[in-house]
Image (cartoon, rainbow, N blue to C red):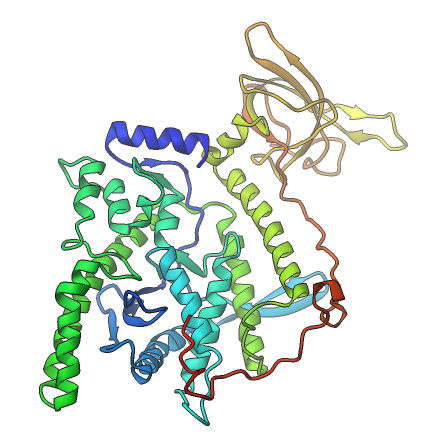
Length: 502
């Protein structure tokens, strides 16, 4: 939790309503996202109990497992879920667009699927359910529907994208909302979607704290999953499941018992379904940050690449990465995280304010400018304008430091020439502009800040970082286990192995 977020939480308590901590939206919200609300049985590792899923707020699909301990019912649930998720994913395989990088040209899909879940627990369920289904066999002993292992691969892909900084392929709604609003409750309490939204949009006449307390009543707003409420389990769910089991055993009133279960589980999921679409509307009202579209393009690239991998007969994702693959993935995510942090700061002055507090950025007013200054000290005359910026922020940079301006063309570079504290507590910083002005000896219009203009400069940069160098898979050092063994089909083929669901 940052300093400004802590302050915003205190203000939320005083004002009785959540406070905005961003000016723009930092997550992509698709035109047609797929909302997925899983529900699991308490005490059972990743045993699905029910799910509500769909891309139409008025037409959700309810899937249930009358007896989660029954393997056949669980995989029937997986096949039914695949019947919704896989066609949704395939619907994005129609339109492609041409793209190029250097001399290489290729095609990528014009859009990509987006899965929205209520909270991080939904992401965890997606990951575990993908792992428990992607290795299943479609023939031999204990076969499953051919759509089940395909569903597992796609769920695993989405769960892996959720770990990628800035990705919007799989989004936990509580995390997306908490990125943009600060409430007067703890981050742990923010994981409850109903309570979080109660702070953001409290009913008339109620404070956020009062609305959140009311939203924590499991009778009115059941938990957003994946776990059910213990009181509901003991008083309603357990008797209904026992009645269903008796009906199956006796062969009478099976449909009635199943309908009772469906009614109970729908009552647990429908309130969260409505909250999910309310949250989507709230996020859509925020203007998207400048770099959101670029990050979504990265998601579309990843979707295109994984689709091609599946079309070429790619094997299921391994249960755990080898040493080289793990190192590559970690390095890639570290670079993505550094870039994501800079992009958010460049897009949003409220995010940049955190870096102003740490001295990594400052905002000031241009008090003097020499826009046509030419440096003749080298072999070639070059345009090097000078500007003087007066700021009330703490300035920790020293002469010679390279700074960047998010507000100027091409994230204009400037070199610090001098830093001089003034008697009134402000600081005068003289900068030499070194780029972003064109190639002529006269600056292009608008490329040199004018006197009186407020401008931001920072040490943060999203410039290209070369990727790390790693050995090939077959050259994994012995200190890291040596080359991994070739892929083997480890799909369960025995009664003992078939129950691996966690």
